[in-house]
Length: 223
Ligand SMILES: NC(=O)c1ccc[n+]([C@@H]2O[C@H](COP(=O)([O-])OP(=O)(O)OC[C@H]3O[C@@H](n4cnc5c(N)ncnc54)[C@H](OP(=O)(O)O)[C@@H]3O)[C@@H](O)[C@H]2O)c1
Image (cartoon, rainbow, N blue to C red; front, top):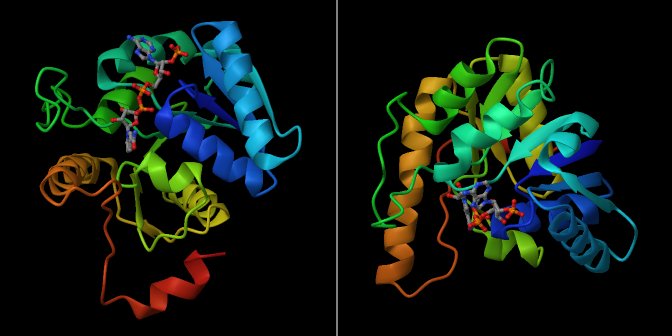
């Protein structure tokens, strides 16, 4: 699969890109600056040991990808979505954004539209299927391909799109769980603030979450 990562020069985008590249996928890194995108793609190629990634401007990357993943700070969310709006029409957009308050990073900034994911769906319109995922996994695990039991909570209003994104998590060796419609992104995004608080209090780098009590979910959703 050709996976475009818009804002993929940052920590989370790099982590995801390295993971998918190691898993044999093709990765297109998007940036506002072409040179940065190319440099970030080279870092992924070095980690994967093959030419798995290339770099482009955000809009071109979104157009070239079969699926687009958005990894930018919440401050840049609406502007970036406007930029790639046409390029992602007819595709799935995986929104990884957590609406963190830039002044107070351990606080959630409650999005006027409910959650970043709901805002993304509103901005992109019904022609693009927005799915939330990967908010609760730290880039530290992704970048080095560390094994982690962290679950990936996947929500969005299109059930088939959720299943496709669960497969994307599976490529990284992670269990994706279908947690229902887009409005549940309010909870998924908010959980990240708790994980950041836990990281601070316990001097950890990559606290994550594991949902227990669903033994039947494991095997199939790891495929
Ligand atoms: N880091 C994590 O472990 C983690 C975990 C879960 C979720 N998340 C979420 O994932 C998103 C990305 O996190 P990150 O840590 O990767 O962020 P980041 O490194 O601060 O930024 C990612 C990229 O976004 C672009 N960007 C930054 N400011 C921008 C602006 N004002 N306008 C347009 N583009 C801008 C930059 O790319 P260019 O300059 O190349 O355009 C940057 O490299 C955030 O919403 C974060 O909350 C992060």
